[in-house]
Amino acid sequence: MTNLLAGKVALVTGSSRGIGRAVAQRLAAEGATVVVTARSAQSASASVRDGREQHVPGTLAETVALIEQQGGSAVALPADLTDPEQRAGLIGRVADAAGGIDILVNNAGFASYSTIEGMDDDVFDRTVDHYLRVPFILSRNAIPHMRERGAGWIVNIGSSTGMPPIRPFRDYNKTSGDVIYASMKAALHRFTQGLAAEVVDDGIAVNSVGPSTAIRTPGAAELIPDDFEAEPVEYLAETVLAMAHRPAAERTGLVAFSLHYPWAAEIPVRTLDGATELPRREPPVWCNPNMLPLGI
Image (cartoon, rainbow, N blue to C red; front, side, top):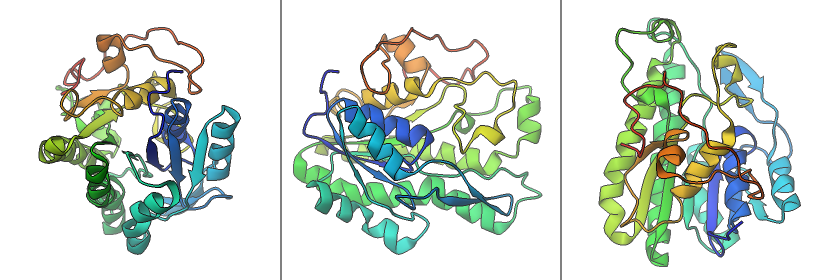
């Protein structure tokens, strides 16, 4: 551990499990006070997929306990980001609870896949809200706080699905039903790059990090084919850390991917507690060729 983030306050949305929890642990291991948020502190949150309410394992209390066990500092602030009032007030609550905000990681979301022909309006609207509206609102509200502190870092969790599909089309693209989810991730990539230009002179860095392949989180596992070569979450968490401490003048506006970037930049990847260096892991040759090694 190098205490890269000592004295910093980070908000990680959707951090009761999966990618959000892993990122929160990694940032805390580097000295940040991490504010973790999801719908409930003590119980697994319910989300809707295919018209069914699903309860996916993981709570904020568990995330806080893991961070504290590794010697870090975390604060749980439950918030339902589908609720306009709660998402509008979250950044202010973070600033009040932790004394400000330096890092925002927009991770929260629960994907619903459906072909265009079969998708109803509610699924479309919910996907837009999860993956574009919420990052927009939280980023907009965080910028003044970051500007006052003289610097800031916004990291949006992107996706390889947001890249143009490989031609000729793979069977996955023909049948997965990820088009609207992927479209929102593509929009989030462009949002990242455009916002980066708007705030670079304020010392605020804005970058996107997505899995190079896929990560079998509790919420995403049923969307990933059993024979798909997934990747460990530690590589994504390390790439987020890489985007959350360098000055904006040096590193901003990147759409980067979690196996590609550490491999190309020769960044050591560590366990979530920061204690152990993991093996270098080269991106598979079958990855989407539109993902560039050092980001787009």
